[in-house]
Image (cartoon, rainbow over all chains, first blue to last red):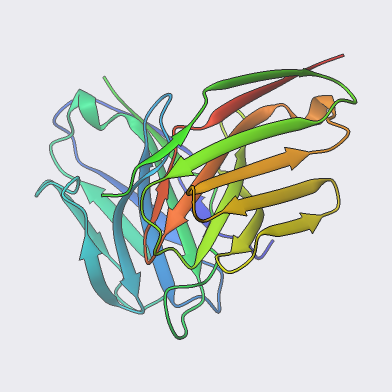
Amino acid sequence: DTGVSQDPRHKITKRGQNVTFRCDPISEHNRLYWYRQTLGQGPEFLTYFQNEAQLEKSRLLSDRFSAERPKGSFSTLEIQRTEQGDSAMYLCASRTGGQGESGTQYFGPGTRLTVL
Amino acid sequence: GEDVEQSLFLSVREGDSSVINCTYTDSSSTYLYWYKQEPGAGLQLLTYIFSNMDMKQDQRLTVLLNKKDKHLSLRIADTQTGDSAIYFCAVGGYALNFGKGTSLLVTP
């Protein structure tokens, strides 16, 4: 399977704990995105990378959230001191680069986080 | 930011056509997308349309774009029970802005 993969698929944690999610994009895609989706809502943009550079962060990304893409391949999203409001599906997407902002984003299956 | 609006629910009978509508506020998007999400799963790209096109047909799917009214629609011909899912309209530049999704229920 050469699609976007995410790990783990499900994570249950207690409030105050730290969690880390991983995303492996499609291999030739140099742009990688993180979105968050809560129940009954569409995905909301969190941040994106072009290669290893983090180019944009949403206001939704509080200082408890940090994302990295150290070698321009896989990415990690860490949430420190989790809160119940962090419970959501965290989606990763990737696309090719190139001129302009066109290009289709392909999504992974998501990591569902439940904070107790 | 970008506002993307969709009706929340649609119910159709198997074999009928389904039409899902979307309106948006920002007209600078180069591409506009339709994604499908089944329960507990990620988003599957269905189709997209380039902003200088009025219509795109892809097998059972027809996308219509009215740029003047900032209206996008997705028509599914001969709707099947397997088409039951949530359908998202998405527009934007480097980051996509999604609607809340239209839940399509196909009844036998």
